[in-house]
Image (cartoon, rainbow, N blue to C red; front, top):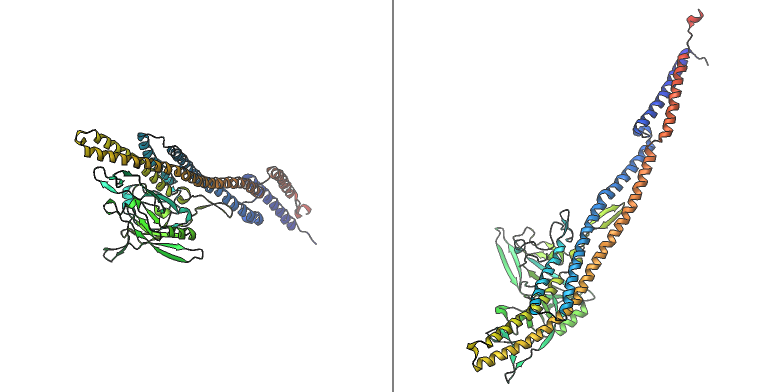
Length: 521
């Protein structure tokens, strides 16, 4: 093949351009410290870089945002549960000491006040929040567990359905022969034919406590017309719905114990239902069962009761956090809205295809019945204090001049004797109430401990996930660096070689076809 001068010149220029491109590529790599600057430089490296960067961004999101946020939420929850457990320990101590009945009158009064404040402190832990979100109220992170003021609670009206099982059945004490026979001190006692004061008879009654006391003695059905006028239809047709093992539902009629004038029969607080009767005391928030009904409910192990609560106050727990409810306030935007109690898990993505629950719900940590049990203890203490005050008053009357006649002295002496017997009985019942409280507080402590353990387990899993992700992040960074970053020593050596080759190509080009045709003429 004939080689012409022009062919030599073209080849020389082409070789110079190739060497210049190689030198430019290595120069860019030295300047940017990257193997490629655009996908077309190396599509394989570009595709792998996109995948590694995407994975690294996800790991960084988990490590720098999701995991710290989840950890802070869990830390806040654990702190609230620690404080709640500490409060329960104080309550347990009070119950242990109260079961010995070693307190004076002034100490008993202090106990009642302390129990009330500890109850408020216990439930206030359910209102802790993290970053403006309440930690114990499920998906409703903008709603506190407890009503924060009387104004916030005054217009609240819910129809509540509570579900029970045999573990919710317990006993209460009723006094079967307490009659009001004297108006001087509102004294309740009974005398025999000889005029001697009879020691009150005690009978235990099966019951379940509702989540609230002072509930409505009717269920009001409200309708609103186009003009906004509200029509209320009241119903006292209360029923217990019993579900057997086969899932069949039967209903038991419930009789309401009214409290008009403060007393009915032998007093609403001392009502004894018949064997086949269920009695509902809206004042105390209790269902009382006759023996036959109790056996049926115990065997069925599943029953429910629906009632209305419309007089909430500051510090009361929001029922939608515990029970199935229907909003019964026609002036509320959410009127007739049904709230079904179910698990509401707030989950964070903390790893690839891995979620972690961060919230703990109120019904798992802050038992609504603790408040009812505290009410029982306070009532038991106040009963003793009231009787002590009445005895003190009678003793004072015995020393007054106007009561020195024989009839008054005899009557006051009998009253003092009756009050003393009642006080002895009240002290005995108070002691039993505190003894029962010991076991109940232990159960509440166990519930709180389980909630704390659950939070602790999740924190452990979160820390393990964080450790794995930290290792993954390091691996992805290394892989990303291996894929994208240059080997500086290798590139410098290559650059020096390319520069040498480029300079050599320029030198060679200067010598190509130096002679022309004129040199031979």
